Every structure is written in structure tokens, then in C-alpha cells.
Length: 538
Image 1 (tube, helix red, strand yellow):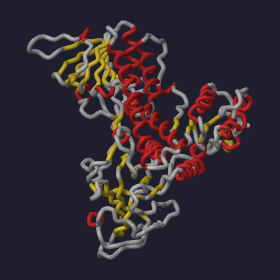
Image 2: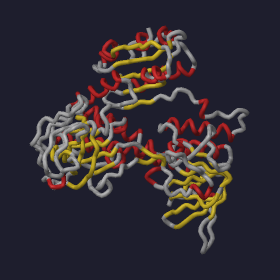
Image 3: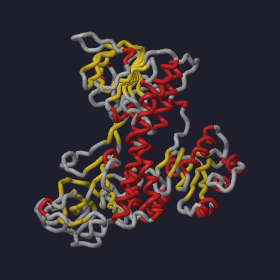
Image 4: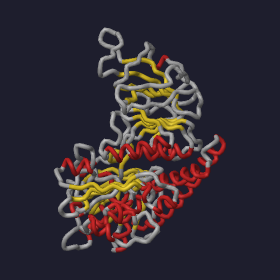
């Protein structure tokens, strides 16, 4: 237990009890920022964090920063050719993990001391649960601590969503993003369940390290919320890195493989080849029966099976879904079964608010239908003087949104005449750190059309940007949506080197209601990627 003791009261034969002005459950971005602000204002604060490995929150420990550290190391390995042989791949991966651990350890320590060294803040390492509207018990290694607080802030973040697949919890070699970022040895083959942006970041990263990556997508459309041209460009770039995709694929079971790897039983809809044996009777490591597998839709692509452990997941085609009379059924929707053998599996099927074990009902805090803490536009929960910040409240799962949630809460505590609310928040941008980063803000063309807006589409190939050529990074495209009559910028999608920086310029223009002509005519330094906005909005 890590306790900075100014507010702790203990007596022999009783559990410690603390009475404080504010209790913050979770050491995430919003919570830790609020704690420091409250302390500076002279208020007593308790911060409860379930794990000493999570001081500072998800971003610095198991999210944004460690993943970006590994992504940069992987890009360097690709540029240097260190991903070309087994020996150099392993050395590059080992160095990358070592650097990632150094960065996260340093940041975790700094974050801990930034709070724990303040006289007004008590940091307790333990798992908290409500015992009443203003009371919480924190289970620590040394025993429970009771905390009573005037105001309570829930900042527990989100946790990976794990699908209900037999064997997924018990099979060695199956990881969430947290575990996959902390391996000592690089997997030669990796299967990723889920093709959302988290899964794609890991696909790109491990492909750059030299891992053979296969991504399983449960339906036929790649990135269905993105515009078709943007999604196609992202997919093409991932495939150019060597990433393979299998669409309409549902993982039915996961089990250990005979060679020490992982074996997945996968059903693929729309495929018509069949055999009679079940996956669990197929010897692990076999997979040369079909070197090319074609589905009923042109969006279905697969790996080419091989016994080489440095190649993609070994695939054996074992059966089609039988009809009621036991005969193979080839009429749509057909469902072919395959065995995939791999070294590691990443489960990247989204994240869900982390409310387990909080006993929210004891405080009168309700959840939404999606399992998030229910909040209003001020981030009030359904209980008086209890707020929820960050991923746990069901908002966009970004560190910078957690920080903005802090602003919403602080504006109520600092005596503002008009508190800042969630409704005041404008144009949330996002970035996905692929080999060519993808960033967007506002509406895409698909959404603008669905909203019935009158718009024009602006496009610019990244190859037309001088700085991209200088950087030898000409891949990608830039796309913007502009309202026809007003010139209002509705949104932008940038698949480009340094897009994660440039997108913030577009967001600022949108926040200020600046027309597209503002970016068209802005004077930028040269050569930069940002100056491409002159041409994009021309």
C-alpha cells in the first residue's frame, strides 16, 4: 500500500478511517489533474488507485504513450532494415520493450510523486467500493480503509471487452493490448481479433517489427464508419506492410496448439469449400490443403497457409456448416470452418467502462444501457455530489477528453458564473497511429450525406505535398467536407505523415467558425505538411 499519511487516522485494533473534502477513485488524466487543482485550492483530497502499476492512468501505463513508444521503435526498425532477419527482429523488439518500460516507469513515478508529495493529498493503493452515498471502503494489502468524503469523483477508466469465446480466458498466448505490449519475446505470427483502430495500430506496429499479422473481421466491410475511399486507402497501406485480412470471420473457439502456439477455430460466412473433420481433430501445424481461399464476396481475403513459422498464421480448411440432414450446405449463407495456428492472439474488440466491483448501487449511482456511469452535461451522476470523469462515463475514449472532463467538473467547483459543460465541447479530433497516421475531425462524407447537408468534397493526394516527398512519405490522401453555400468546414480526414499534428489546425479553425478560405489563404512556413491545407481547401 502506498499512503502519504497526512490525512490518515489509525488507532490500534481498528481500521484506518479518513474524512476528506474530496475522494477521487482512479488515477487517470482527469482525476489526477483535478486532485492537483483541489489541493492547490487548499482542499484535502484522497486518491484511490487499484494498482501501483497504474499511477498516472491508462494513457501513460498501458495506452497512448507505451503504444506510441513501440510504434516509433517499430518504424525505426523498418527504416533501418532491422525487421529483415529473425536475429535483428528479436534484437529490435527487445530494445523497444526495454525503452517502453523505461518510459512508462519514469512517467508512473513522476505522476505518483506529483500527487503523493503534496501535503493535502493522500494516495492509497487499493480497490475501492461504495458503502454509502458519501462513504467508500478501500481494500489494501494491509487491510481495509474507510473514507468519507463530501464530494466523490469516479475516474476508473475502461477495460478491454472480452468476447465470450470458449478458451479465450484459459489459453496461453491470448492477450489484450496490455499484455501484448509487455512481451519479452516477439511473436513471429500474430492473429488479431477485431479490425477497429486499436487492432489496426497493433497490426501496423507488429508488421513493422517483422511479425506476420492476420486480422479477423467479423463482417464484410472494413472500417464501416469511414468513407469508402479513405477505408480503402488505409487497408491498401496495411496490406502493403504485409498485413492480411480475413473478413466475415467469427472465432468459435481458442485452444493451445501442439507446437506451443495458439489454435483458433474460425467460421467464415460466404465460403463454400468443405471437408468433414472438425477443427479440434485437425493436427496443429497442418495447413497446406488450400493455398488460396476465395470467399463469396470480393472483400474476403486470407493468408496463404505455410508451415514456415515466420509466415502468417497457418490455416487449415476443415469443414462447412452442415445442413439439418448432415450434408454440406453450399447455399448462402455458407459457413466454412478453418483452423488458424499462430504464436499469439490479440483480442481487440473494444473497451468497456470499468465499473466492476465499485458497488455503485450503494451510493445510488446508476448505469446506462451500455454499462457506463450515467451522467448529465455537467458530469453529475444520479447521486448528489458524485461525478464521473473519463472513459467510465461513456464519452469518447481519449485522454484529452478525460482532461476536458476535468474542466467541466472544475468549472463547477471554482465558482464560475456559468459552468463549462459537455455540450460546450467542440469538434473532438482523433488520430490513429498507423505507419501512415490517420486523423479526422468533424463529419466525413458519409455522415454529411446522411445529414442531408449540401456540401463539396475537397481532395488532395499526399504525393502532391512537397514536404511529404522530402520526408520520403508520399503515401495517403487528404479529404475535407465543406458546406457549399457558407464555406463552413464540416470535417476533415487526413491519411498522411504528421496528420496527428495538422488535424489540430483544422479543429481550431472549426472551433472558431473560420471558413475554409481561412485555411486556403493562411500563410504557413515552408516546407511543412501543414501548408498542404492551402491546397486542400483551395
